[in-house]
Amino acid sequence: MEESKSKEFIQMIRALWNEQKKREVLYLEALKKDGMAPFRRMLSQGHVSAVLFQKEIRAVYDYFKCFLNDKELADQNQIMSHASLQLLESANGKEEVASCLKKIEAVSLQLYKSVRHYLDREPEAQRLMDEHLTRTSEFYEMLCKLESGTQRSYGLTAAA
Image 1 (cartoon, rainbow, N blue to C red):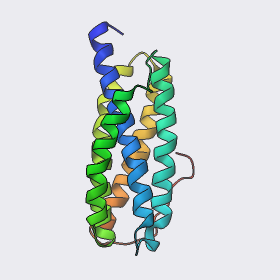
Image 2 (tube, rainbow, N blue to C red):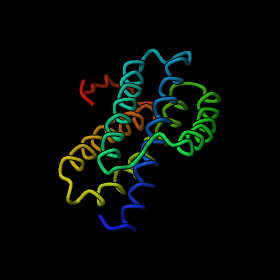
Image 3 (tube, one colour):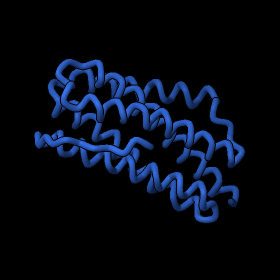
Image 4 (spheres, rainbow, N blue to C red):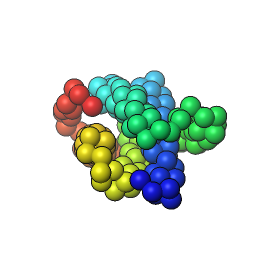
């Protein structure tokens, strides 16, 4: 990967890791809210997938010889997560919680799509990102249905 493309990739993968960290925090907070029983399973799976995706993104990041534990990354993430957390805390009911989580999933989807084109010559990393994209799309679709108030039994695959 050429130098300029490498720097762009590093920024994108950091942003993606930050979004997954934000997802982890928000899904966990959503689980703590009252009245979430009907979609507690989906929230739990969203939280677990965020944790798993962070680990897998870190592996891709490390593969490209990047160091993910820098202080800048953690500080930036705390600021962004705090704003999203405030939105979630003020949400009332399943529909508003779903709307808040859907916004986070939409950002994650865009980042996955942006990262994909940097991985043309890395089929294993691209496959992993495609799996994340597919899984995140499933969460986004379910949250769209919950936001609009249509409730059905949501089935998710066990592996993220």
